[in-house]
Length: 330
Image (cartoon, rainbow, N blue to C red; front, side, top):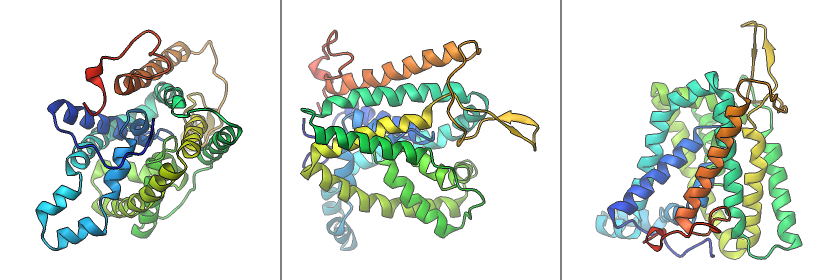
């Protein structure tokens, strides 16, 4: 199966619009949690090529038509139906889930990360069949990708960093580059750069200066990197996919639910921080069974969605043949 197509598939029916909107909601939901990548969701649900091509359509040609007031030509060239529908889904998730995720990170961190660990683990399993014929070079590419993501997501977050517009602009560029990569979370990059909590607060309080600075960096970063990634997928598809799968596997470090609690002298309480070391779970702890169940739930959800989209999921295809009418793009 070829990952990259020549152009973005534009939704035509109500069902296709709804599916694309919900995909955007899933991507936005994933990107609000450090360690989970919206790019992974796009990859698993079969819109990754469409996403890259849609981003690439914002180029000199489309901008030139817009400047010439050739509105019809602009909308014929740019797959605006895809961009607007997916974007609305992402924005909906970010605006509605920022408070919920912030609350869950404080009060139910283990359960939240257990669910997302299941989603990431399921994603790794779902996209493994994209590699056709494993070779030594592909295995090496996967291992290198996994190692890179493992050490990146484990980097110690910076402290006492400025939140001025210039810093936020470049942080946005770095985060969006990661966001469209399967496995590497834009939120994780913001966390490492010391900007995650500030960005989350900016969304909740509608801090316009911070949001515009981040958005501008995201716009520049995504238009630049999408072209590089698209070029790699067209010319070195299998090797690039192997690296991307490695990214997903390596990112499991970031969503491991069980962390080492440390004593905070300011609150005189044991707290778990993003940079806390991973530890083995205690089977006697009250959240152990619930966490395992949520890992299974997350794993099943992402593989079920993949099977509905592709009909080729390695977990479900042996006992459930997806109806042809559910194929992506129908």
